[in-house]
Image (tube, rainbow, N blue to C red):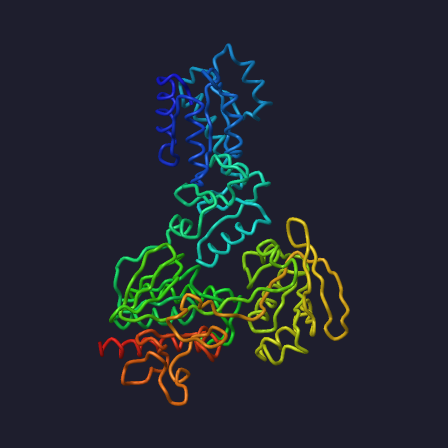
Length: 544
């Protein structure tokens, strides 16, 4: 940086001659311009090796510039260009900005006065541990619910990111580079250096390269939901030539995608994590030509002649010959006072894998007795000091697979508390305590707890099907034989044939997986139903 164009061009010329093959060399003619460049490099995750600034500069001298540049790139080596008359200022700068070297002008010949200095500085810079961060960066508050949601969104979509807290030095440097404040958090900086402040899921998805817009208006098959059933249908539908699009509100994998280890799925004798299984299925579907749309919420379904129209929350819509409902289920909310207040701030529905590393040497509590709770307990036991499983039943036998119960019994830092439930939660800015009740004796106990993971049963979110598709009294979608009452076809059914096995009360609209009434609630059965639904879709389309 030098306000004299002739000097800055001469320095750049000499540096490029020696270092241009390995380093990018930039120049600026003012401190403000140089700082703007440094901010952009910071946001892009590109490290700066050496800063060379002239001392005498209008508006901002070289020392003032280096002071501010240090806040952005603390590992960069710092050099001051000075004249003989300014050597005292250069010596003083050694203490002010921890100056590495000062160069007297002129530096000719560079082979003697410039290159040896820069060589030594680069050697020192390379020896430091300051690997560039090219992943998406997330800056936010440790106990922010929205920050937790953003991190979980990126993790479940298999997107690499780096997390920085606002009260850490690097987090503060990134906020400064982004011209953002703590009130703007979460602040997301993608790999291109673009800054998002408090983005919605759709804005975040677009910024990190996920597909959020359909490429067509009409398809053979629309799959609503990206869990095992939806992914299975997308794979088989696309591989068999159907123009297939899958629409997912958050991330492919569904509840299964949050499982730390699935050990009873066919073909994986050593087990597979839910995220790995979901990622493989997603890539397989894309390979066969299925289109995947993320961060779009479906709000209604409308039969329109031979077409089935799916409408989005933002007003958009797509149509198809057939639709498969594979939205799965979501965990029920815990009714205890205080729990909702700390959701995302110590209380998490599902396994929240992004929190596992922060559970080291802590006592954590898991509520639930089904397989998902057991899998989370086994996984968390590798990090936590103690994992407490709280179940209202007398044991895990009636709700958890035998293989998981055996594993839990062999892990010394997992403790099962039967006939126990959480009756309240409290804390300041995050969860700090919960109250447990022994339902056998009625005794209550307050315990310290910063992490509470809830797996307390599930319910379908099928309100968007009101008045269109028949459901049971719990909201699960009825299909096939379950629609027949005393041998009669469902009201409004006008076709001469009865509904096919996975067909709903609307011809051409099918259902698969956990959202179907009386389904098996297992990954393998959901995948199988998704594949079977495609066969029924073929029959339906062939008769149109």
